[in-house]
Image (cartoon, rainbow, N blue to C red; front, side):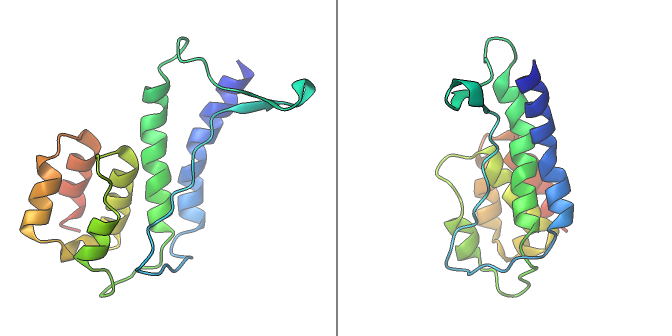
Length: 146
């Protein structure tokens, strides 16, 4: 029960981190964006620092992780200084994973809020829309026109 409460607290931390670190980090356009991991496991110091994970049978862990991982990626993307005129469509597609995921959808929203998705062509946007991934589809649609 205590691990469950700490996990819920941990899932809300990216929202504050996104506001606190807004536009504070520069990046090289030759590097991939690094998104910190959300760790929902705990350690038991009394048992030689044994790692304890949340029991997936008690709660739906994937449901718990989806939105926090999305917001974690948005916070990581908003941490970047606005790279107006420096972001190319090649760099955006370089950061695209092979399989659509929640983390990449969050990064796309952050790039869209900074106005960086304007460099994408219609065919790039079509490729994102043709993916059957709810988070990517909804957030590319809303952030392309920012």
